[in-house]
Length: 155
Ligand code: DQA
Image (cartoon, rainbow, N blue to C red; front, side, top):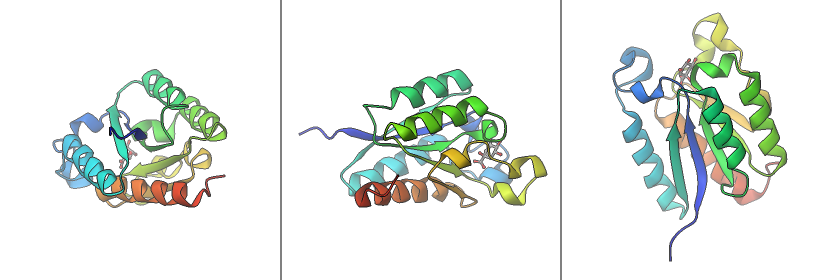
């Protein structure tokens, strides 16, 4: 029997360059490797993840909106849009009220970097934020989302 694709993983701008992009900050793991490790972890829990990346704010908003009815939650690294995008925050808040919660994740510890990165537009609309554990942040985010879903405590 085919498993339903339940969790949407969204990677924002510049994350397609992972592995080559500022490796001293973001590590050497590529986006494809992160997606593989998420799929492996999801398989252990008998769920499926769908992973997408875009450099475009509108595309990310479309995918977040379309998650309603197709996915039970979102693991989201909004990249640089974290610090600027009211529109992405509104999309995350909108789908949360429709039963699709989001966990925000970051590879780097955004609070330990430049001042402008200490503000997340998205975090108040998300269930929570995981930041600073490199590629592990995504896996921790997925674990947190699956746990919350299991306990039915997302409201
Ligand atoms: C990032 C942190 C952001 O501040 C930055 O703009 C990124 C990556 C992270 O995963 O650490 O693009 O989201």
